[in-house]
Length: 59
Image (cartoon, rainbow, N blue to C red; front, side):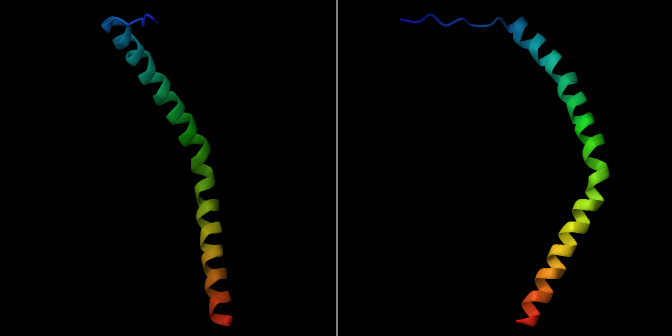
């Protein structure tokens, strides 16, 4: 029969306090890397939509 280890409440609080800045830093890095590519993605989506509309009207 396995015995499960239960973390103390202090350990959980400490884990949350450590995780918050790490997640915030990763979100900041992601935002800085993705933001320059957003206009390219938007332009690509518009090109695909207009191309699809012209093909639909032609045939």
